[in-house]
Length: 311
Ligand code: CDT
Image 1: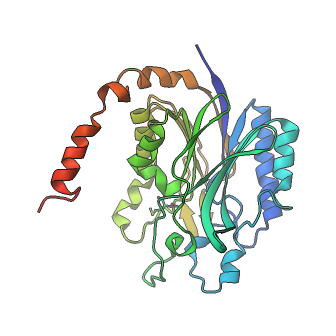
Image 2 (image 1 turned 90 degrees about the horizontal axis):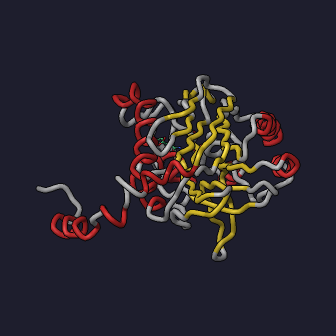
């Protein structure tokens, strides 16, 4: 059996702070048209696709911060993306900064949506693992203020029936955490879509810098294999406002093998024909959770240790 979803991973090169939403959307539509020409069912864009990666700057003026957020989706500026998707009959995944009113107050999330081939939003995810810090840290060459500008996502890690399979989403730093994949794996996920903005330099741990690409591949391949799922990881790459961000956007099979990878740090589309039925032999043998997982034993370990390192 085979259930093919042809996926385009649309890596996006640097976006300048001065670049408008309209300019970015024009770039995204060009990638979408390439994806359609390559036979894609869905095109996957990065985290916070519509602007430069603004958490690198410390800002006290909330109006300035909010200029990077979307108050509606689609908006006048993003409608052409939805219209083109509908016209071409192609789905997409898009990351953006979401400003919404919930519980009578303004709330801000690092969000991703899944849009079907008719241009309708069918799923939404809000980033759970927010990296970085909340206050200005002068020692850094650039900031990483996601903990200042966003709340922790409040939607969990659901999965959805879409594109003929079971699809889940996560965002950037989420990909480093096994829980992310496992929570979706326990729900039978067959394809995880995710975008990232990963600076090559990590100021608190510069000794990791030379391993940035290795760690990127390592975590996504592990998540794929250990949960028998496809993983599509898409970067905003290249030197953006003086900060180098890694590329190596890639499409990873349930075997853990990368089947396509970007080779530039700019706007670049890679395509893979992903057979969702390749998940089956992993989910029914080595990672048959019902048969082989031992949550009762994990519970004992947590109880005994308090899930802390021993003294
Ligand atoms: N955007 C995002 O979550 N970036 C983080 C940077 C962590 S510092 C290396 C990431 O995990 O890629």
